[in-house]
Image (cartoon, rainbow, N blue to C red):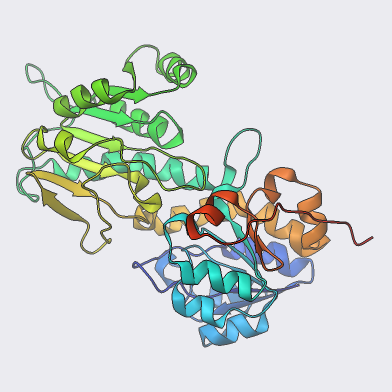
Length: 373
């Protein structure tokens, strides 16, 4: 199979979808991998690193797209990228179509692209590829918050996250007890913070309380408890996920107005629209803004801050699926793995994700794949 990795060119994205080890696995099996020159530089992989594993370096994004049957990416498609996609190609990437532009989904349908979203693939009740990035994002959320609590960093509260003897630690309030929330708890406790976790799922709260041996406070999430928690927080981590859909605003602007001056919000849900009403997209080079005296960090690709680690994590989580398509063909790969098939958003000119079809008012058809054997 001919597989292409273009250089990411939006939102200061530094990750690459496959590492040299991943490329080596593909080329050893006889597959051809085209990589745009410089695609790995942001993760400290040189063109030479890829050449040694059998990849072919090309010198334009257009060439990568024209030569490949399957395009492997990290960031959601740009309008330019969707224009140069070739008819009937397979696209494997984070898609986040629910918060994208209608032009993207329209072009995917017109070109009969099979678009597979990393964030939608399921396995054993989880989201294996998304979770690899969520683990990183959860840890980074505390690292970022700690930085912006400092007095000389955008007017933070001047609080040491873990406190000292005789001085209370910071109060970290985490909304959502999923993968991001759990890894954020681990990072915050490791620094000595006081941690409160809110979630509407009692089973999740029991699980996370048990995991951390009652060192945290867990609270059932509803508008009343969220409002109280937000007011108490020195750091607020928003980690709400509704698979494949836009995140709901569960923290209102009125709640933000009640927060402490210089408190820090890290809205990890921003790649799906954000779960804080006052959130808006920021970037790695300009990551924060202040609204109602509260510092907001809303970078959708925050894991690109540790691009090499993130690239290895993404490679490890996605390579098995890529090898399955390359070795067995798209149809057989999807037929053999129902969780993988749940990642398909468009197929043969139709939208196969009902939530996205409803958002953009395009025709929805359930994914029906028939063996060609």
